[in-house]
Image 1 (cartoon, chains in turn brown, yellow):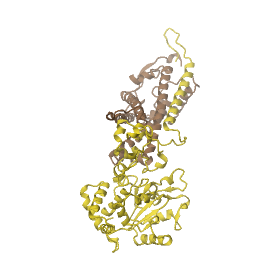
Image 2 (cartoon, each protein chain N blue to C red; image 1 turned 90 degrees about the vertical axis):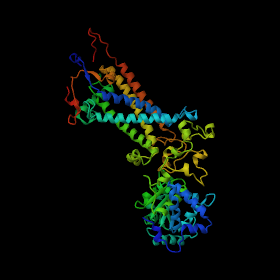
Image 3 (cartoon, rainbow over the protein chains, first blue to last red; image 1 turned 120 degrees about the horizontal axis):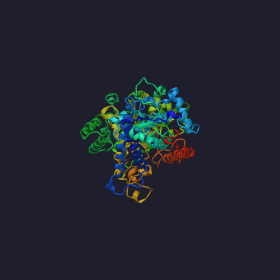
Image 4 (cartoon, rainbow over the protein chains, first blue to last red; image 1 turned 45 degrees about the vertical axis):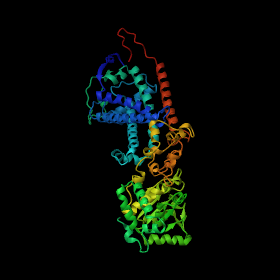
Length: 239
Length: 372
C-alpha cells in the first residue's frame, strides 16, 4: 500500500438489522448451546422435586430457539432489503471471477503467503463463504430442532409442516445430528472470533467495533449501495 | 369398505358374541371388554354400545397369520398371558385359518388350508404378518412350503382386505434388518407396496392394541387413523415420554445415574440411563402389558424405543444418543464434538501465535501514520 491510500474514510457498512441479527444470534447460540448441552447430559441439576429445573432449562432453550429462528429469517429477508454489504450475492463470492480472485488473496494471507490481507469493505470472500455454510448449519439446526420440539403434538400444524424432516431422519438421528452440528457451530464461533480479532489488528479498520457501531474505516470511496437483484458482485465495480 | 364381513361370511359361522358365550364368557365380561377396547381405541364411552352391537352382529372373518423372519415373540405375547382374556378369545375366534405355530394341520394339509382361505375369500380375509421379509437375492433366504417368504407375502397380503403387521420386524424390518442386513429384510409395506397395511410395531406388539385394531375393523369396517409410519394413532399417537409416570422426575431434573443407586430405588427418571421414551411413540405407559400389570419403565428399565423404525441401529440400549457413524462404538457424539472444538481452538491458537511473530512495524513518523 502506498502512502496516498492512507486516508481512511468512515463508512457505514452494517445496518441496524444486520447488527441486531448478529447479536441476537450470538446470544441465542450461547444460550442454546449451554442449555442444549444440559438437556443432552443433565449434570449437577435437580435436587428438589418441586424445582422444575429441567422444565425451565428446556423452556429457555425453546424461547431462544424461537428468537434464533426469527433472527435468521429476518437476516435472510434483509439480504433483499439492505445495502449491498448485506445483500444475498455477498454470500456467493465463489461464483464470480473477481470474487474467486479476492478469495485466493485472503486464503494466501491466512496461509502466510501474503504479508497483508486484501482490504475488504464488507465481508471478505472467505468469510462470506463460511457464513453461507453456517447459514446451512443454522437451518439444519432450526429444522431438526423444531421437528423434535413438534413431536409433543403429532398431527399439529408444526408437525405437519415439518413432515419432510421426519421422512428423511428418524427422531434418534435428529437428536444425534442436532448434537454434532452444535459442535460444528462452536468450531465456527472459535474461528469467527479469532478472525475478527486478527483482522481488527491487521486491517486497522475497526473490524470489531463496526459490529457495534456499523462503521468501518476503509480506503475505499464512499459508496451508497442498495442490494438489488441485478448488481452482481458489488466489489467487481469498485476500485 | 363398509362391513365387508356381513355379506361374505358363510352361514354356519357364528357371531363373535355367540362364540364367546359358548366359551363361557358372560355378557358382563363381554361388555367390560367392549368398554376397555373402546377406551384403547381412544373413542368416547358413548361408542361402547356401538362396539358391543357390532361385535354381537359381526360374523367371524377369516384370518390368516403369516410368519416370516421372526422369533414368534408376538405369537407368544398373545398366547402366554397369565389368564385367557376376552381379547385373546376374540382373536382366537376370529381365527385363524392358518397359523404355523398353533395350527394342528401340517405340511400339505396346512398349505391347502391357506390356499383355500385366500382363494375363497379373496379380498375379504384379514392377514396378520409376523416377521420381516427377506428381499435380497430374489428372496432366497426364507421359504415355507417351497415358496419364498417374498412370494408368499405378495400372494397373501396382496389379496387380503387388510394386513396387520404385528411387531417391529413385520412393520419395519426389525432386528433382521439391522446393519448389514444380510438378507435384505424389510417390513410388509416395502415388500408388498400395494397392500393395505396397518403397522403395530413393538417387541413384542401389545396384544391389546392388536385386539383394538381388529375390533375397530369389525365395528367400522375400516382400519383406524394412522400416522406417517402407518401406525394407528390411538396406540402410537403420543410419545412415551409425554405419558410417562416418571415424567415429573425428568422435569424436576432427578435422574438415575447408576443402576441400583439411590435415585433408581426412588424411581427417578431413566433419561440418563439411555431411556428412549422421548423419541418413541407408543401407548405403553397407559395400556401397559399383561393385563396392565407393568411396562418397562415401571419396572425400572428405560424404554429401548422398540416401536420406532431403525431402533435396532439408532437406539443403543443404555445410551441416549446413537453411535456416530464411522467412529468406534465407544466414541460418543460429545467426545468427538469436544475433540473437534479443541482441534479448531488449537489450530487457531497456533495460527494466532504465528501471526504474532509477524511483527507489525510501530509507527515512527510525526503523524503516527503506521504502515498499512
